[in-house]
View 1 (cartoon, chains in turn green, red):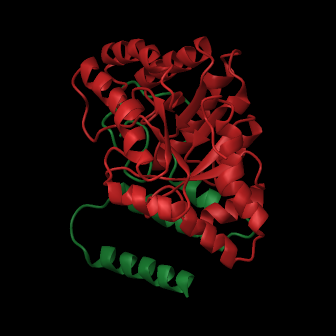
View 2: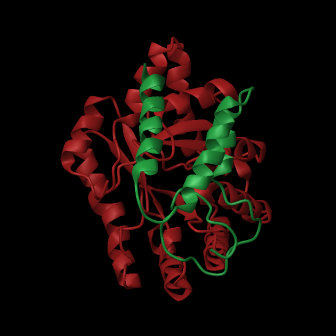
Length: 78
Length: 258
């Protein structure tokens, strides 16, 4: 029941995004990529979803742009 | 606990909590001077232990300047310079929570200074790993910094806020790993138990945040209830919520719990 509840919440969230107006958000692209991992086999879905949102670059950045994280890597130069 | 009411100490005591450790933390805004940190360290080493003792809880703490304030390297250096004044306080366990926030060069520089301070004074280390999209990269950078300092024994380092994509590298490096139970971010009770089932119970613990944001001080006993509901043995639950933290923290001889 708990997983069903969470899945319907995600479905409703995606419907809400479709209904919304305004600019697109790069985090939705990462979200849709992450969702694809739910269909994977094996035992690494949680890890793969987390990696889909993660910064893949190896080097430290020059200066922290602020304090917070936004949920998904915006890409190089963003 | 500095941002919580005494009601939370009462609830923790009622749930069976006998000791807690509170890392130096970001205040939600940048402190303006080293004297602001001196006052904060006095609060952590003088006032909070007395407040906790009223409820029969032993209060321990970790000292540092949080990674969120590492871009001001001059202030960070000043703060690091006063930490030794507090190292002999009876409730100080070591240096923490140090680490990275946005994985910047200045954050790395301040992290290296903290690690050097810990090595010089033979202190335990508690590490904060970054949030969300920055966690995997930041954890890897942090592990590199620690590995590059040959004076640091990996078993004396707790890497906190591990998740499914970082727990393996932390354990492989010989460190302890902490799963931080939050209502929204970091780790849920169900996932924390999943990781114990997948990675075993060695060198792992759970911790609850008691900060000024959404957080649940009783998250550890609640997760223990969930673990019990899944049918795990009381000995395993006791190991994760009591014996493991006791084993790691007892590496500091000031830590004493029965």
